[in-house]
Image (tube, rainbow, N blue to C red; front, side):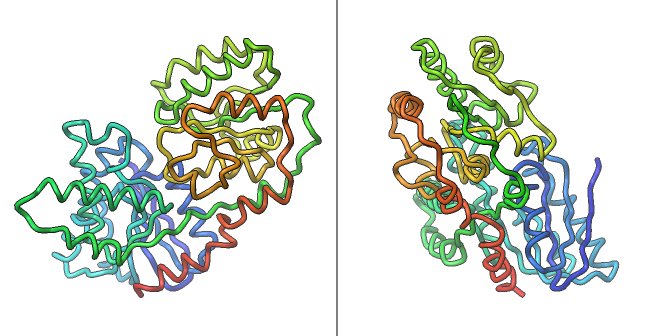
Length: 370
């Protein structure tokens, strides 16, 4: 098993423990190390098999932390994500008389995943989120939606133990929790410019190719609009996996006349260039704890069309959100009467989520345990 270890040299000194170093988790930690003026030591594992990471990464990471401390390295605290069993980590470190403040950042919570709790084994992962939160000294959530659904989930979870009075634990969790939006580095986007206005509106999809992002609804609506003779072009981005939804292969054929690009782009510069060609970015997600992909597209000048639910209610005003059952009519109206997103609106919608705006808040949050 490969484990990466990277060190910067500026005090104070925090351990960053990430057993799932990919996607938004990697994006977040890279931004923090770049924009928060602390020293960080990163111990990570590749982004694979998240369930196994939650169940087994803590003993492995505890060994690495103990090695670091015994070698004479001093730390002011530990920051980890919810893919690490923080309660087990803290227990194993305390057995070696290593007592460091522990902060947990919630990119997601298992109580709010669709169908997670209908799975007979699903509660074990929600329970790990709960015990990690109990063990931590500070908690941060990437959206108010994430925090609220976690607290509601914990409340329902504790109610199942009717003969065990533990509801007071909710007060403790809320008292040490806050919302800290994940910073986004827009510098590469801002260095490039859009190349004029498109004659036909270009729709962008830049999400993971998985069912929880509901690509089925997205493409079914596009099929119907195309059959009605409504003009649009299409850029499909986002990462696909070995068992991607079948609708992507279908859409590549049925919408071939509209497609400008279809597939994952590894190169960041090329990814931004494609976003800058778009006019509209769409989400049909069944769950979304934040929404970095949409915000990046908006920074590139795309008009957001997002559900009137999930974290999107925090990110975008009502004019950009469609109610349940109205996605087709909302998009159709936008395509027929298209007006591009103004540059000032692009900045207003995105700047408060930039690292330039958020770095001081993260610095204060980390410093609170030193």
